[in-house]
Image 1 (cartoon, rainbow, N blue to C red):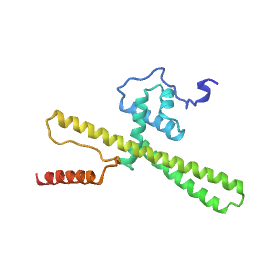
Image 2 (image 1 turned 30 degrees about the horizontal axis):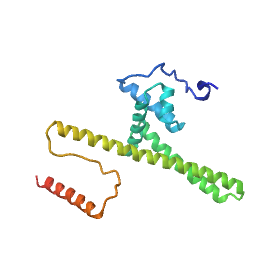
Image 3 (image 1 turned 120 degrees about the vertical axis):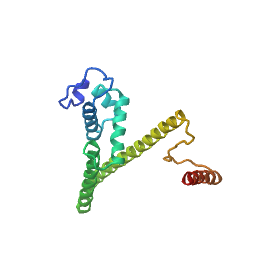
Image 4 (image 1 turned 90 degrees about the vertical axis):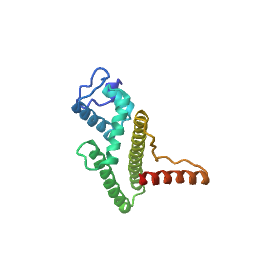
Length: 191
């Protein structure tokens, strides 16, 4: 089978070559909506979406990060971020209905089938939550990096770092870090 036979075209005339920005606001929104559909509705990874749409994979990864990040920071958007929330809600509702059906079912093979469906839903929900968390972390790291470059270029003394990772240190080191942060925050309040 050729690639065209195995992947849906969704009625879209995909571009012949990779687009090299800049994208207009309308182009960006259309692209993100399509990325949303391919990633969340069809479960395609960034690499496959990039191949299908003939768009640089970094652009697709950035769109996916944006979509997950949108969910984290704003639940009231009227764009693709809202669709992620709706999808999570649908999965939770479907999970509840399946759980109720499982409790009523007497047939052993039907119970196993329902349990598999429940496992699939839980796996999807965990995957979405992990992606949201990873996206949030990357956004904060990116912002901290940008702020540090800005501070350096403008000869400011303060620097930034994100607190989104867990690192094992000795109790003594942890105490020193907490003390340094507390002292720095106290100095800022005194200014």
